[in-house]
Image 1 (spheres, rainbow, N blue to C red):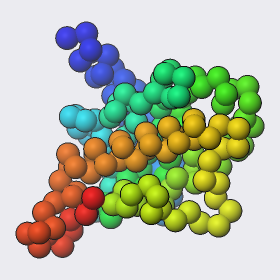
Image 2 (image 1 turned 90 degrees about the vertical axis):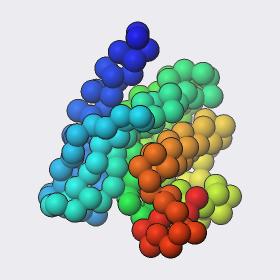
Image 3 (image 1 turned 180 degrees about the vertical axis):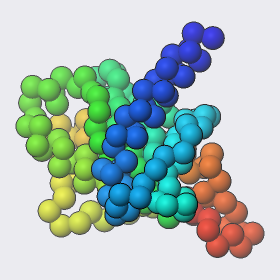
Image 4 (image 1 turned 135 degrees about the vertical axis):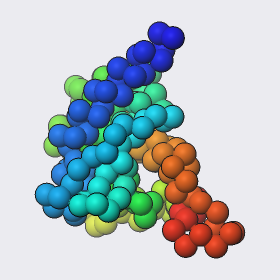
Length: 178
């Protein structure tokens, strides 16, 4: 019961933070963005542009209980388009010692925001990053990998539980193939 209460409490925080960050998480959809209710198991918010569902927004901490390399909490807000691509990210909390004392904040922000565009249907090694977007944070390669994994793992969990992977074999034209 206590774990459920903690989870619900973090979910409420995440929904409030997501509402503020919608333009950052879905930058290609202008000012018509609105969030639907927070749904659970795992928690995510449906995101609409006008009346059209454009994706889901969620907290990696709420979805997968993400932790950094140090084993301490790590939380990234993620926008996931219905096409299976990460639309935007925002690091909201971490306690990684190397990221606090050894990495410039702008380098960390460039890495985290550069996760936008990743396709959850592809394996990590198949992902192509745009030129100029860092593949990792210099001096924090392992922490970078953990951050990227938290985003992709959480996004795949949301996609699977929301039926985005569908049944490609059954001919579902909207299905995202894992």
